[in-house]
Image (cartoon, rainbow, N blue to C red; front, side, top):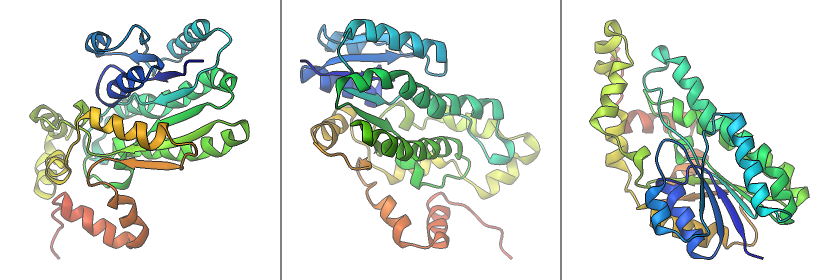
Length: 287
């Protein structure tokens, strides 16, 4: 029986590369898209690939997608779920965060993957030996001044994945967290427009004060980490994770990021904090 995979956020970046890789290996691939049209992906893939519009912040749309895929698979189960869709946003210091924007980011980056797992677990159970990859982020190891919202959302998702892994083990469903780092996508493109949004998020009466002590974190991230093309990343994921018989709890894949969890393991909290203050150019008040 041909293996089947469901990938959220498959129109661009990591999701698109993984969809193309699995399609090239003969899988039946179902992918979702929202704001970015999937035209280029469809052109490059076989007729086995099916793209479906889904806003993962909308619970009703998630349920509708699950039902449509169940109708296609009929009595067959789903082999693999890759929860990949995510967004950045809600920039600025915690003091000034737009809580509505942060709430929506959590809807996409945390509640969306949770609802996806709930909706698709019945299909995954049918396969007998299904697997779930939750795409988190190496940002869970970073402390990014003026950029707390994305790593916070991914840290919550990382914790949820650990719990899901243990709960699904008795049912023969393997779960792992994929922590990408250094992949060239729209989310790692820190443009001038993004910098403008960052400073615009700070009220005028506080702006100069924050600029005095902080710089644009996107500049430091671009300078500090090399970037792989998504295709290379997908090849690594396929070989290290999808082909593996027994999954580890976490896979960290990407250039120059393997040292991040090691740093947290062996250095004190104070030394880690000092490292990130230096990395992001935080200028402390001199006493």
